[in-house]
Length: 222
Image (cartoon, rainbow, N blue to C red):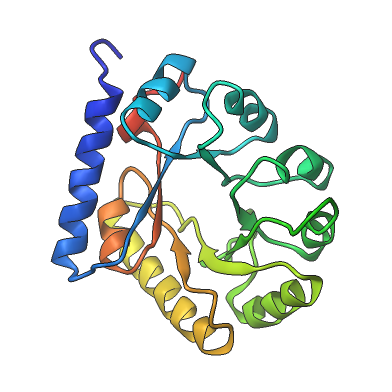
């Protein structure tokens, strides 16, 4: 993309986040995770120099490669599906895992030195058969299981069914209700990881605490 200014894009996203938070009457912080999948080193460095410290990756191998490009104060987020055989690569690197979705992954996540990084539980909010995630009705039991393993679930994550950006409103509302209900039983599950480039302002309006923004910051992927 000719003339791409990643730092300016990041500043614009921050302004939009602040405006959306203000309209919603929110005073809490919304974390911007820059999704750097298939982006060039120059673009990642430009975002870092613009002040971005939270970067998200969908693939374990790319996460490991991109990590070497940036300083150690970056907080890396694994936001895509994670195979058990990739846990050893990802676990020592990430600040948070956003795609905890099954018991077998949880069993792998606890293996390794020290405490496992905290997780967002991926919810299959539309109960779509082709998607990963915990069914809403199984959420409480699954979080209990994570706690029994010593895994801190700090929030819920969802990718709503495809549709127009405004169609996500109903799904975001469902996620907000699920989070509010879950907090009653599990007080630390306060986070909501939802909202991407096309709908992050709507997600903030409906309670998202962590948005995952790719092309709006970095431009088109390679």
